[in-house]
Image 1 (spheres, helix red, strand yellow):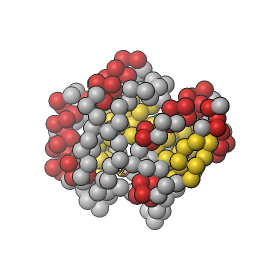
Image 2 (cartoon, protein in one colour; image 1 turned 120 degrees about the vertical axis):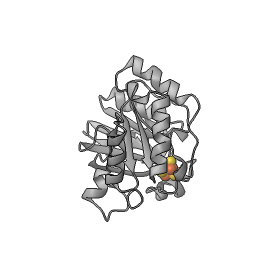
Image 3 (cartoon, helix red, strand yellow; image 1 turned 30 degrees about the vertical axis):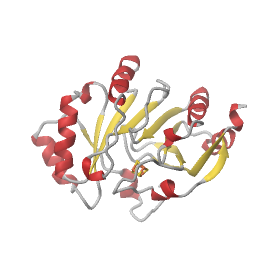
Length: 222
Ligand code: SF4
């Protein structure tokens, strides 16, 4: 039975969505354990390094309860095969499903009804491993459903910004998905990033992590 399938879970919690075009909305978070990358600024190291606990899909659905917006995140959630039956189940239950991924795993099997939020890792993250098919997959998803995907760059420096700008323009990314630029706290001042993208008239969204503003001391479950 699909409901008895198991996933390794770092944490299940209900909070305010801090990122993406859904920022500000109450959201149920499913954080899966394990990641294939080691980004310099990672704020979920516990999900990367700890094994987590085994929870069935039924158990996850019970924790999600009546929440209408659900985000599956990590770690890297697409590393666990049972994430796909989990997505199917959440969608069948009528949830709005967000899937946050680091971009290194093919997106082909993510249902069109789920919204992919895909990172493109910048050089200063120390992780540059975008799956070669993923930009094309996002392009195809955009023809199937408007805003079926969002693309995020986490920027540690203005040189990361220059690198991201070149990828955005070369691939005309704003034509296929909302593009989010998020400065790493304490490394790139948001005002510097705002100035740069305004000067360049780049059609992107400046994103500040809302949850870190609301709960600056929290280390997990925020
Ligand atoms: S991909 Fe995400 S979870 Fe994995 S190391 Fe990078 S920031 Fe952390």
